[in-house]
Length: 452
Length: 186
Image 1 (cartoon, chains in turn yellow, brown):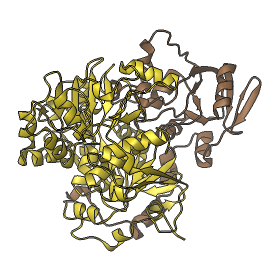
Image 2 (cartoon, chains in turn brown, green):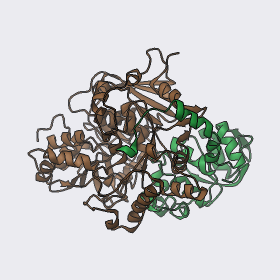
Image 3 (spheres, chains in turn blue, red):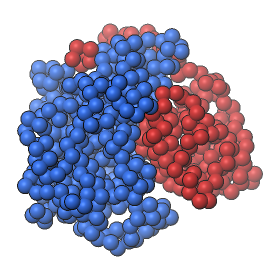
Image 4 (tube, one colour):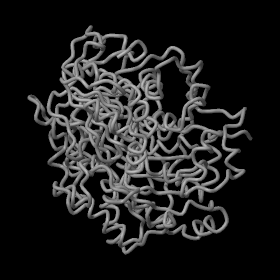
C-alpha cells in the first residue's frame, strides 16, 4: 500500500499501537524542571541519556554573560542552573552558557547533525516542527510528556491525520521562505492544520535552502499543525553529512524517505507560490497578515477590532507607512547563518534609521562564530545594529531583551501574540531581508523595489 | 492523577477565539521551576483590563482554537490551579489539548452552538463515562480518544502504563532502533 513520508516514519517507530519510539529528545530549561522533579519523586531514571540533548536558550541573556552563575535575573539563573544540575544528575549532555555548542535548541540540533532524515524527534517546545525540514517527524510536547519520554523514550500519541500543502509555481524575486509560510497561514488560518502532520511540497519548497525549509517547518504550529516536514533530497543530504552527529555518507534508507506517488492524504491544499509577495503581519496572530504592498485591512470581526486596538493601527494605513521603534533579527525561525547573510546583504553600505534600535541575535554560538568569521558582525555594527550573543532573545522576552509597552517591532520571529515581546509591545512578523530594510528606512518597505 | 467521572458546576465564559497560551500564562511566569501556584497569574495581562470577570468555576467555556501557540504546560497548570476542571470550546490547540489530558483537566470540543448554549445556561455537567455534556435544557455528546478516557476515568499514571510495556520497548531497541545519533558522543 502506498505510504506518505509521515506514514513511513510513523510505522517504523511504532512500538505498540499509539506508542511511538523517540530517536532524539531535545531539552531546554523552561519546560523540563518539573519533569525531572517528577522522575525523582517516582524514583525513575532517564532511559536513554544518549538519545537526549539539552541546551539553555529561553532565559539566556544575549550580552555575553559567560556562565549561568552570572545571570542577573534570579529566576532565570535558578532555571538555567536547575537544568545544569538535572542534566548532571541524569547524565544528559548539556550545552549551557559558556559552551561552544550553546544556542536555540532548534538551531543546535540541525547544526550538530543530530537532526537527521527519518527520525522521530520531540522537544518541550512548540517550534520543534523545525526539525521536520530534514524529513523527520518532529513533535512539540508539554512537560508531562517530557517526563514520559525521559522515563520511557516513547511518546503516547494517537496517530495524527496527514495533510499536504503543495506550492504551485515559483516564488518571485525578494520572496522568502518566511513569506511563503506567512502567506500560507494567512490563507488557511491559524487553526488550518490542527490535528494534522503537514508535508510541504512543490517546486517552491524543493528550491529552498535547508535554512528556508526550517523557517517554513518552524511555523507549522502557527497554522495549528502537529508537525511539518519536507521530504529529504540532495540539498538535505549535503547539509547533514559530515556534521558531528551525522554519518559520513548517505544511508540508503534516507533515499526512500518520500511520499509514494499514489499515497493519499487526509487533506490537501494548494498555495499559489507565484502570487506571494513579501508579507507583514498587522495583528496579533500570525494569520493576520498582508502583502507589504497593501494596507491595514478593515476589521472583519470583534477579534480583528481588538487586534487593531492593541496594535494601535488604523484600517487603511499603507503597511509601508508604519514606523518602527525596534527591529529584531533572530529566533528559531530566522537566526541561522543563511538568514544573517541575507540580512547583511541588505544592510551592507547602509545605516539603520536613527529613529529605532536594531538588534541581530545569532541562533547559536556556532552561528555567531561563523558570522564573525565572514565579517557579518562588522557589516551590522557599521550600520548601527547591535550584535548580540546567542539565544531566544526578544522572540519571547524571558530574558532581558524585551520591548517596552507600545513599542512597534519588526521581528523575524514566529509569534505576534499580545505581550509576546513585552507587555503591550506591538510585533510585526517579517523575513530577515524585510526586517533589515525596515531598519534602514525606519518603516516597512517592499524589498523588491528598494534600492537603499 | 485523580480519577474523573463527572464535573458539575457553574460555568465561566471567555468568548474569544484563538486564545493563545501566552495570554493564559505570560512568559515571565515560566521561569518558575515548580508545578504549582500558577493560578494567580492566569490571564495576567487581560485580567487588568476594565470589565474583566472570570469567576473561579469548575467549567470554562471559550472560543475556537483555545490554547493555540506555545507548548507550555504552565497554561493547563494555571487553569487547573485557578479552579477549572474542564474547558469547553469548539476546538483546541493540539499540544494544549494533550497537556490538559495529562493533568486531568478535561478539554471538551463541542460545536459552536452547543458551546454558546452551555455558556448561556451558566451551569453544566460533564459526564466523562457517557461522553456527554448536560445543561438545563440541553445536552451534547463529545469525542475523546478511548485510551485517554480510560486513563482519566481510572486516574492512571501514563508513565507507569508505558513502563508496563517495557518488554516491547526493549525488543524495539534490540531489533529496530536506528543507529545514532549518539548525543553523548558529540
